[in-house]
Image 1 (cartoon, helix red, strand yellow):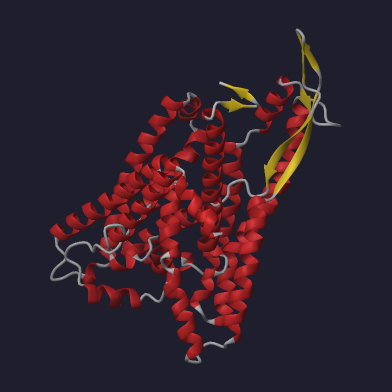
Image 2 (cartoon, helix red, strand yellow; image 1 turned 90 degrees about the vertical axis):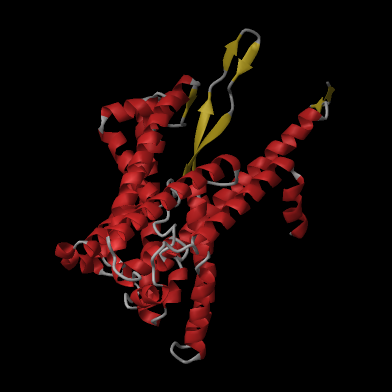
Amino acid sequence: MWEKFSSLFKVPELRKRILFTLGAIIVFRLGTHITVPGIDAAALKQFFAGQGGGIFDFMNMFTGGALQRFSLFALGVTPYINASIIFSLLTSVIPKLKELQQQGREGRKKITAWTRYTTVFLAVVQGAAMTSLIRGAVIGHAGIWFYLTSIVSLTTGTIFLMWLGERITENGIGNGISMLIMIGILSRFPANLRDMWVSISTGSAHPVWGLAFIVLLIVVIAGMIMVQQGQRKIAIQYAKRTMGRRVYGGHTSHLPLRVNQGGVIPIIFASALLSLPVTIFKAIPSLTWMAPYVQPGGLGYIVAYVLLIFFFTYFYSSIVFDPEDIAKNVREAGGFIPGVRPGKPTAEYITGILNRLLLIGALFLSAVAVLPYILSSLSQLRSMFLIGGTSLLIVVGVGIDTLMQIEAHLVMRHYESLTKSGRLLGRRG
């Protein structure tokens, strides 16, 4: 195992990408400890202790403790995710945005620029809401200067994380935004495990929950990996074609359809979207009566959570996977699904299989999202949120994607070495 791990650093390009990613993670973690100017640390700690978990504890998990310290990265990448959701929805209903998306690189660059501007706007709104919530933890009087300083600091922190995530995607390993979310979640694991140990050792919780935690954690992770990697392969037969003296086709291929098409995207989008209204309801006095209805763990929150997971599972699949386009490409390549006519019947056949897979994936994501609330209620241990839920699914999903990217770089390096050696398929250059 250690030999395989050390071999990663023997490939120059992969070593540079891994070191760049580690450096970016260190910068991210340092930024979570830089508090916004003018904050009374003791009063801030007392404020969060009096909240009793809820939305603050939930959002604090995604920011790696940055919200609890009210640091520069207290908002995390939530505004960027919300902006991405907004433009994903608008692209499907506004013809001009859809046309830009189909224009290729230049069109996507314009949509990306608008997404960034929207991120700044949402960061200002969320920053103002968060600042108004913690105004009691300010040294002295929370005047206009403190509000301005705080909003600018939080917005700048979000913009920096957005830029850092894009740099990780371009120069590092894995998806940058997902990587930052995963690191923020992992940074909270040791503290949660310590709290569980203290609760069991002091008699506040039954020791059987410690054993149940270990067993359930292994079972849930194994189930997540199976579903994340699960595929339904549709056989495609290609007819023989003669072009000149060459014969093409005559072989069987497969069209792989993943059980969980969206990966961690639906659950991240659902979590991020639910955090925005709760923040607004808490910040505006006239809307505080609505906050309990969307508190994490409440019936309204869970129902909305499940519905959003189902919506984003199907919506994300409709954006990235078009059965009609697949059927058209298969037909043009001279292929067909055995027992299914080419064209529209093929598209309908693929759509039927895809819808059943998406239903299984959405049910799985919903079960994973609700499981921690059930276990936490039964055991009275907040650490049970490590089993399942958004956090573990993101960690497992991002971890698998990162490992696959590392494997792809290693395979690419292997093929490069074959080319550079001057020997390819037994021939000398």
